[in-house]
Image (tube, rainbow, N blue to C red; front, top):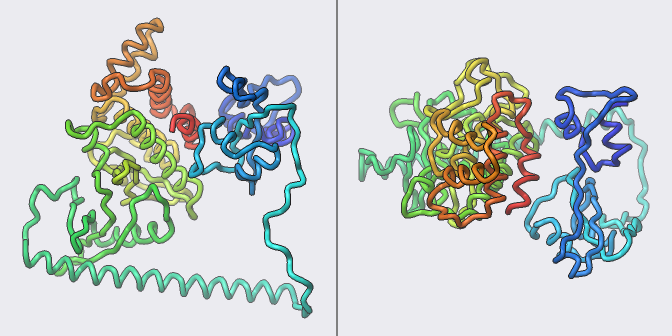
Length: 443
């Protein structure tokens, strides 16, 4: 029997096949009679607070395509708010298909499967004309090709127009001040500037790399990714170009962690960790084609006015392409996955490693430019230390700016998650799905 059959039939979707593989043996595809299988199932029992509100049972339910919390409330005859409360969700939270949630019930489980379809009613019959099926498919293909070509040229025309506009503003600004002061520098080849009194981020790139960035940003759009506004080319030297991005007002995560005047609370740090994971999940699984970021670091993560995180995507590679040269997409001073340094292999696990490094920086406030921070972080996970010593070492590792204003259980959970993300063996690192499920309980 295959792992997919076990997941879908025996456990009825309550555990995903990829989770079974990761829990037992990486690369596991089938099982024979007599094999032992570890199946991690999500379950819970009502605590005292839940029982006081009348909750007697928690039913584990896997979301399917088309489900939402409103439809779930109709199936089990409970309020949407009760579902949110039991799963630490809010109305803005995105719940993905195949995610399991806990349904709080005050009586024995009863599921109403006669939920009316929310799709619009089908109109009355219209006269039809027989059409040759093959001819229709060919016409559809031609129409899709035509729409794609028109759409491409519209996007190209828009970017060129934006580029010409930005170039004009850039020239006008250069007439007033020819030299860029050091204060405008955000990081190497990245600057902060003003256009119509609005702050923007300007990335200087080689001319040949500009097309790749424009191509990526024409295919992605997400609230946790910094948006590309336009592009302009050098006035004299066409070997350089300038990409203009939005500039989140609170600056980079690294600057906020290093600033003595900016103290990030524990709640803000867990929300930032969740936002970064959500942006990575979009790139890995939702973008078409999917991408590997390959350059996640605290200097390339920016914070908005309400302290929500956005990823800069200056370079990314499609998931179906292999990297030719080791280290060609990393930033200087960034601590990267060992398999990427040794073999130049580009996988989602390289992004998971980099994400773990950012988590360590969020927890400690320190900058992780090499393996030193990692060595400090794992001292309380090994060596046979007792529980009290473990918590004391964890407190010493946490950012002093937090002033012990944090839940120690969440701090330990986040530290363990960060440590698992930077495992030397990429097969031992969690998936971005696993990361989101853990963090969803904290935000």
